[in-house]
Image (cartoon, rainbow, N blue to C red; front, side, top):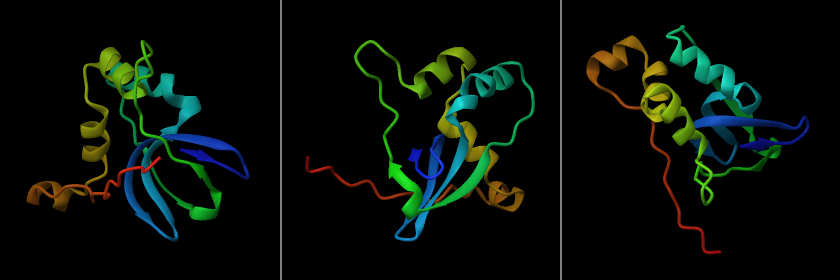
Length: 114
């Protein structure tokens, strides 16, 4: 996700999308390599759970590979052996929710007509 005013980029998992804004769990894109090393080394971490008002959001992109360039998720998995979606989801469920087997809120996917 690319944000404006101030300009920033985040990578992670969308928790909720509403007319007011977007909630997500993840990290600043500039910290991606450090995050990968922390996970790979077994260090504890807490990805941020953040809300961004819609007026700051410039662009939201799916994390897809581009030709021979792997996506960030693929790079994360290759270096850590872990699925980032599972890791981010498990870090953000409260202990009561984990015992009940709850899952993070889903976001409805829409087809892009363009």
